[in-house]
Length: 292
Picture 1 (tube, one colour):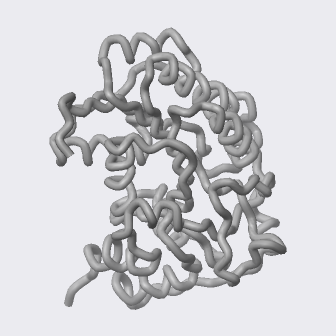
Picture 2 (cartoon, rainbow, N blue to C red; picture 1 turned 45 degrees about the vertical axis):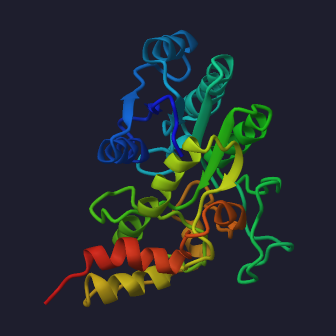
């Protein structure tokens, strides 16, 4: 595809995990990009960024997930709303005013297994399904903003879940998190392998795709399956202990979402997309394999 106007990306979320990876990707691909300096909830600062930089596309990887985890959002509700709702909507609105597509990294943690989508059935939630998980304030705000963003024809919403990358030293990496927990639950889930999917999100911007996409690798993988691969490829002496959802509930403030998302819409657009287990091995475990 030969495009007359070279791509120029404006990225929000410089200090975040996905935002940082996006910048690295753009550098390696020779794509011109700048990190936004404006605060998402400050409309004038966003307008100033867009005017100064004149981007072709905007990416939003900024947001509050909470430190060390989503439990933080339960006791910081206004701060969570300010960024995740007011901020995201303001950015979408500014982009619409300027005729720009916004690639918005959102979450798929707004669903949980139910009667119509039972655990182990292979029936995943689709893009048009209504969120049914309200167990955490974080997820509640994300479901609200997704619903409102449906009205913005310039927004591409990417539902990320339990993100994983090949950087096993990163504390945000789902594999790193569960390898450090005292105890883990064992439930199959849809997940996002960033090493494979972030380049796809750049291609989605180039194709000017909009609407909602389940931004996960096809299929599901359980905590134990991941830790078994970790033991096989990384640390043969690794041991872990499981506990039940009921036991987990006693040590967390907010409930956690468990679900399967149907990735067929993304797979149709990108037929090369690997299944979750293939992608885990190819992009995460093989590159980190301990030799000797």
